[in-house]
Image: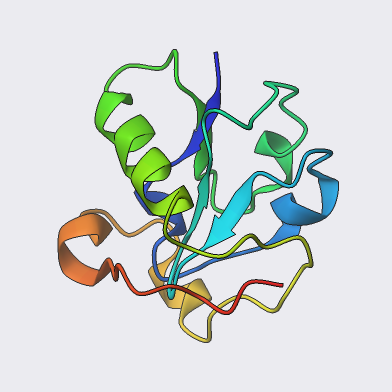
Length: 112
């Protein structure tokens, strides 16, 4: 099992999770985070830290495409290990459905 970030993160990008990750397996895009599935040690400490409930185990239904998206962008985006402020529109976007099609950016974040 591994944990993955789903579309709830898009447009919010809360980074509470990166502060608790013992293996630094989070990577930062312009408007979301991903977890490298091969680096995640399945400890689960990140899941309850996410205010947007965007982190789930890959054993949940319909996560296959999210595992692949997380893997792909973890290879392209910089690692993030320091908590940052969420995106300005986070409160507005939190809980919105269909964010992958509406808002996803494949541009990297700053990392750090």
